[in-house]
Image 1 (cartoon, rainbow, N blue to C red):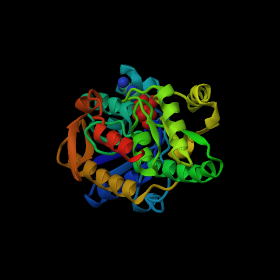
Image 2 (image 1 turned 30 degrees about the vertical axis):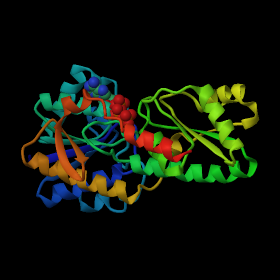
Image 3 (image 1 turned 180 degrees about the vertical axis):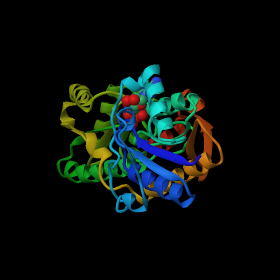
Image 4 (image 1 turned 45 degrees about the horizontal axis):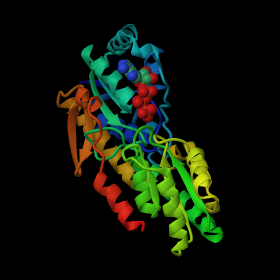
Length: 320
Ligand code: ATP
C-alpha cells in the first residue's frame, strides 16, 4: 500500500482519537500518504476525504469522541453503495483503509476488501462485545466512569440505607456491568449472560440489610432490561428497600480516555498500519494476553465473544 485512509464508524468510544492519531503518525512514519474520512461510511460516499499530516492529529490523544466524527449510513449496506465507496477510494489512489468501529463497521470493511481495497478493523466500542480481542477501545474508560458513579451513589445510599439500581450500557453484552460491578463491590450484577430471579435478588438484598449492610447496589446491563423495571420488581417484593434507579446513559461514552485505552488504541493503530504494509487485508486487529493479533473479519463477526464466567462467580463470592 502507498496511500491509506482512516475512518471512525458506528457508536463512538473514548480512545478513537488516540487510534486515529496512531494510524496517521505510524502511516506517515513508514512513508505512506494518510487520508482522513469524515463521518464514517457516509463521508466516504460523500467523498469527504482529506489529507492528514503529523500536526492534524495533535492534541487529541486525551480527547473523547472522534475528530473524524461518526455516522450511520444505510446506503453503504447496499452492494451499490459499497461499489461506489470502493470506486471513490480507487479514484484517489487509496488502496488501504483502517476502520475503527464495532461489528457493523467490520461488515463494511469486509465488503470493501472483496472489492479490492485492503482493510483493517480496529475494535472501537465501549461494549467490549467484539471477539478475538480481550478488550475494545473505550471499554476501560466506560468501566471507570461507572465505578466513579457507583462510588458516589454508595455514599448517599449508605446515609439513607437504601438500595440503588444502576443501569449501564453494553448493548447485548454484560461486560461493562460485570467489570464495573466487580470493581465497585456491587452486591448484585444482572447481565444477559446469566439467568436471575428478581424476587430472589430482592430477598437477598433485604437479608443483607438485616445482616448489617448499609447499602445495596444492583448493576443492570441494558441487555437485561431497564433499571426502572428492576426497581419496580424489587419494590413489589420488598417495599422497605426503597430502591432508586440511576441510568448513566451516554455519559459512559464521553470524557478523556484512560491511559489503558490510549495505549491500547496506540498499539492497535500502529499494528493496523504495519499489517497493511505487510500485505494483510480483511483482518481485525486485537490484543490477546498483551499480544497484538490479526483475525479474519469474517471469523470475528461470526463468533460470539467468550463470557468470563469465573469473573462473574468471583464478583458473587466477594459481594456477600
Ligand atoms: P457500535 O456497536 O458501537 O454501534 P457498529 O460499527 O456496530 O458500532 P453500526 O451502526 O452497526 O455500528 O455500523 C456502522 C456502519 O457500518 C453502518 O451505518 C453502515 O454504514 C456500516 N455497516 C453496518 N453493517 C453493514 C453491512 N452488513 N455491510 C456493509 N456495511 C455495513
